[in-house]
Amino acid sequence: MKFILIDSRSGKSRSFSANGLVISLAVAGLIGIPAVTGIVGYDRGIEVAGISPERVARWQDELDIQRQQVTETRARAAETLQASTLRLAKLQARIVRLDALGERLTSVGKLDQGEFDFSSEPAVGGPGSLESSEPYEVQDFIAVLDRLAGDIDDREQQLSVLEMLLADRKIQSDVFIAGRPIDKGWMSSHFGKRTDPITGRKAWHNGVDFAGQEGDDIKTVAAGVVVHSGSRNGYGKMVEVNHGGGFSTRYGHQKTLLVKVGDIVKKGQIVGLMGSSGRSTGPHVHFEVYKNGRIVDPSSYIHRAAR
Image (cartoon, rainbow, N blue to C red; front, side, top):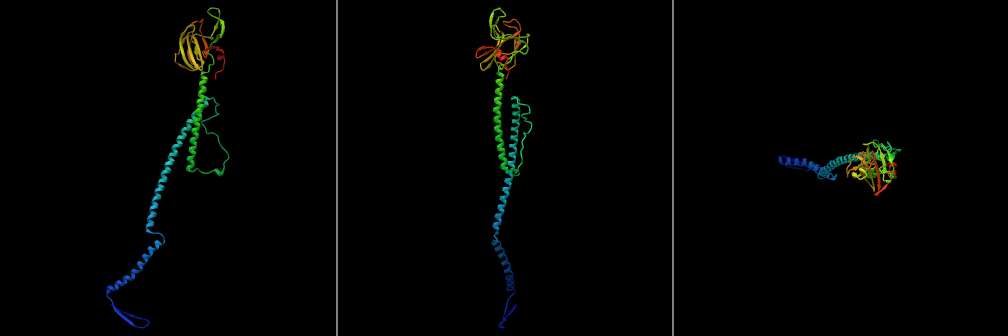
């Protein structure tokens, strides 16, 4: 193929010939130049805008990390909620025990009925404030649980000490000698000098006598430990109880003994049945009180009020 080129200024012409291959390469070159220029420009545009393939890859990695953090945060939140729920349940169980202990102390301490009602919520109140009406954050809620647990620990210790004191007072009341060793009967002989019922002469009487019917119950006037249960000269069948603190009591002339040495007896417990064993003229109980090994007048203990 022959081509003629004419110069527009000088009017001169120039001709040349080219085959089909050359023409094809020239056309391909003309078409490829804009495409290559566009691609290079696009890549440079991405790099200019700061968005390179490497940066996109880094963003993808960061998104993966954030997804993992979200998953871990959700798991920790679930664990925290579960732990808080379990802790709250334990605190509620301890509060139930405190309520039971409080009711027991109310009964032991003989407090007024209704003064401490552990079956109902305590009455509280006060004017509200908008400034303080804020929801609890997780950390604040955990801190409140910590303070509540500490308060419960303090209350348990205080109530335990109070229970010990009341129990000690109950023990002291039980060993406090007071009252008569019988429910029915009358005082037939006083403490001190009297006319001996057997000889008719003046004699010293170490205790007091309560007359009654044969087989009547004989009870301890205080809690203690039985140190003697059997026959003794002059007493017939006799029980002696040691109450601690230097005090002991004796119950003589019984028909039947219902306790043995070493038994722990409560205040008012039946230790035997009334009889006329030993040096006696009829059914009665001879009652004696000892303090630090010395005989004392039982009358002062018989007539004093029980604690």
